[in-house]
Every structure is written in structure tokens, then in C-alpha cells.
Length: 262
Image 1 (cartoon, rainbow, N blue to C red):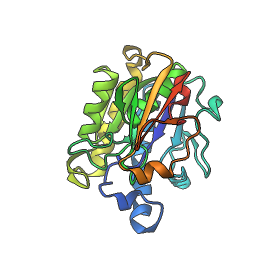
Image 2 (image 1 turned 30 degrees about the vertical axis):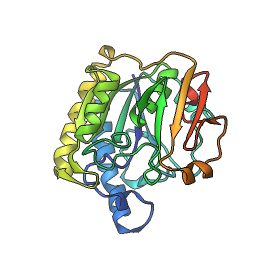
Image 3 (image 1 turned 45 degrees about the horizontal axis):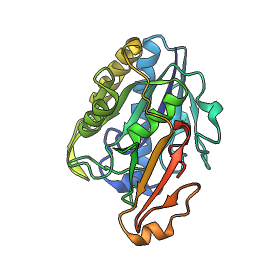
């Protein structure tokens, strides 16, 4: 069983304000270490369930968030600057049986979702695929589904868990890392308590991977990217999308591998 673990930072235990997620300052450095604690607990659960290869992918921001000396010795990891898009390096994603989305967050505009956004935490962007508004959980699951990889677990705040089950179904294991009251305020548990849940959740999810389904949608995929105002839309430089009104762009994707490539 080969497992890939894409990671974000907003849904990690102990992370509750956007300043912790920016790549500067003492709060960010603390968040990096909080990230490693969640990563290592999740890796342990995968290995206990019999995973033979666990690859952790650094997917937050610029992609250089891991603390190498704190990484679990049983994992390999993908990190560094200038992270390529999945469509540019598809070989990175080939051959995995299961995926765990760790530290994820709810889509832009989610009521009481801690640090909710989609792609840009400052831009307020919103995305639709075949008419269904989707956040980063669905985007990642679609991309992984292109390779035949099923998402078996998602960890983040309670709104993230609800969004996961709405999109991916009840068979996917969800692990709540905190409970939001507003975008940057909520109830948090001690990271050690969250680690216990992550370890057990990963062990159970990998053991029961057969019960989960690959997330797909009809092809071609009609995508829509909506900006919150004309100024942000004017500044956008599309790769293949066409502008359809003052604040929106649309594109057709032949495969789910390209869902990020507006």
C-alpha cells in the first residue's frame, strides 16, 4: 500500500490565525513545528496499518514549510521552492493507492470555517467545476482521482470534515483538529490530543481504504473562477481561461489533472 499525504497549514492543530501561515516571523516558525507533529502522527498511523511507502507532500504556499530534522524517519517527502503544478510533473503522483489530505480547510465563504479560503487566502477567489462550487478538498481529490488514487482521510476543522463528507462521501475518514467560531477564532485541543486522533484515524483509514471511492466528475470539466472584484480580475493573467464578465473567467479542462490551470 502506497500512501501520499498532501499537506496544508491552515488546518493543522494549533494554527488559528493567518499570520501563522505566512512564511515569515516567529508565529510561522512555530506553525512549521506544529505541522511536523501532525505529519508524524499521521505517518505513524499509516505505517501501523501496513503502508509500505509513505510520501508527504509540502503543499502550503511556496512549498518550503517542513522542518527536515523533525520529519518521521519512515517517510519520504516532497518539498522545496518553485513547486511545479501537477500537470507539469504528473509522474510525482503516479502509483499511489490512497491519499490523506492533512491540515486542509473549508472553501471560501464557509460560515465558521477556520481560515477558510480557496487557493488564495488574501484573494477571496471562488471556483466551480461542472457547476459545483468546490474548495481545495475537491480540487485535490479530483486531481488525485485522475491517477486512480482515492482519498481515504481528510483532517482539518469541523467545517472541513463536513465539506469532505459532502463531496467525497461518508466512507472517507475525517479527523477534526479544531472547531471554528469565526474565521480566526475557535476552540482548539492540545496538539498531543489531536496527534492521537490523527494516528488512529490514519491507521483506520488505510486499513479500510477499499471502502472508499475515487472522486471523479464528468469530462470535459467546465471550470469557473470568480474574483471578488474587478480590480483582482483585471490583474489575473490566464493560462487558458477566457474572461466571461467583469469578475469571472471560464475554461474547459480535458482531464482533472488540469483543474488548477485556469
